[in-house]
Amino acid sequence: MASSGFSWTLLAQALGGVGVFLLGMLVMTEGLKSLAGASVNRWLLRATRSHWSGALSGALGTALLQSSSATTVAAVGFVGAGLLDFSQALGIIFGANLGTTITGWMVALFGFKLQLGLLAMPMVFIGVMLRLFARGRWQQTGHAMAGFALIFIGIDLLQQAMAGYGPLFDPADFPPDSWMTRLELLGIGILVTLVTQSSSAGVAATLTALHTGSIEFAQAAALVIGMDVGTTATAALATIGGSVGARRTGLSHVIFNLLTAIGALIWIDIYNRLLASSFPTAIADDPEIALVGFHSSFNLLGVLLVLPFSRQFARWIERLIPESASAVERALDRALLKEPQAALDAASQVLRQLLDQLLDCVDDLLELDRPPEKGDIERWAHSLGRLQAFLDDIHIPDPRQPGQQRLTALLHAADHLQRLFDRCAEDARRARVARRSPILAEAERALDEAIEQLQQAMEEGDWTRMEMLARELYQGVEGRSDALRDALYLDVAAGELDLDEARDQAEALRWLQRVSRHLYRIAHYLAQRAA
Image (tube, rainbow, N blue to C red; front, side, top):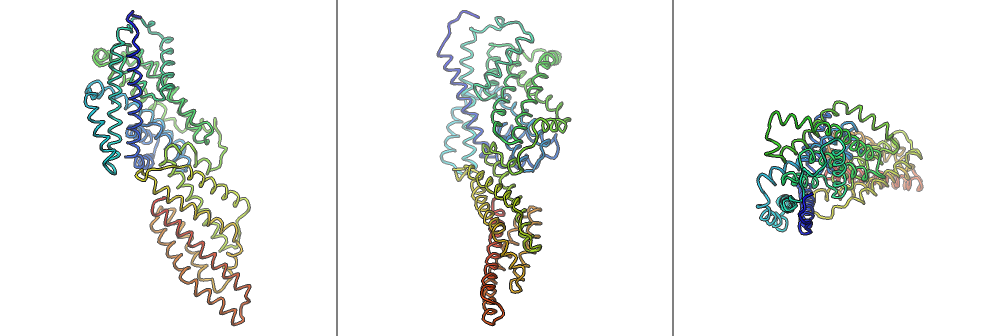
């Protein structure tokens, strides 16, 4: 090392630069999630028809949200809710790995080439003013803009500190390039990511060190590989105590990144030779562009090599982590609570599945006079408890945040679903009475016929039609209830029915009213916001 003195001021500035960079990433990610999180999730789901389209949508989704964890958690939610199978979700996960490299391009192009640090202060001011005084999408845009500007203020601080440290680091003083030194640097890259909890911050610092000449290209490449591997630690820790789907996703991420890292170490020399033959001065003139090109290329190659074998990869992971939880437990993975939109998607899917099962239960009571079995009652009670506890743990305090109205609607729908379950589990005898009563026959038949139509509308995702059918059923039963009750007691007065039988049939009518009302309210909330 050179003999220049150590500067605590420069160290403080470098650490501050990393801190401001991380703060900018957090603020920008929050703003982008508010601005486009729900629509990106819907687009991810629609775009995932194959492993290849899944990888592309995962990469683009991560580039838009600037958060691979948001994309990965959404994929876990889709799997848990039964909207995607595990092998399809792998495409999104692999693509998310590629999407994270966009941060390096932002830093290299805007931070070093365009010197956005000079414009960042006014951008922070404009962004904060929009966040404080604007409304709707402009407010969310201001939030993201302020974060974007903070990223480049952090880069500017880090660049100044690294330039000051430049005389302390002579690349010639480093050990000669070898497999062992590359592995050591890879380990340092992993450690940096573990400490900062952000591979983006490590990549930005590495680009800055390379830009100021503190390290050489091969050393920077090994560090970046290590930072990619380091991101798996957070994913692995997040799966502890999680569902089978979460653990499979975490393990897939770890194995994929380790395989990619092995390939990337081999790719360093190949990439160097290709660059030297095609663009001889690229590394000397634009080392930071060369490095982000390397970062993107080895991640792209990893995706291209693994995707054709994703089904085999998925089956291998499934054998390593076999299924052990119920379908509801898999769907309501607590890891999804970090991403409220993904959690709402999973809860909505579980609610619809339980509603379909309880509709079958009502149909069996009316048509076959068959009450639910004890095992079914216990399973439904457990599933409803899990659903309500899961919804209770989703917190969206700001009414301007997307999803708060949907969460409220789901809470209402789950409450009515619980009451519908009570009618099935505890009042089976009243359904039998309604089925056998000549006076209640028309109302009983209307409910029985409506069930098949409601299930068909739900299967087609036609929530407006489902609400209309449920409303017509409820209004029909409710509108005739007084006349039907009068008819019962007229029969008592005429001596055709004793009082106890009339009371039983009146309770059966009340059962029909309650079931039809709960179905209408559930359909209403699904049509309004919950689905």
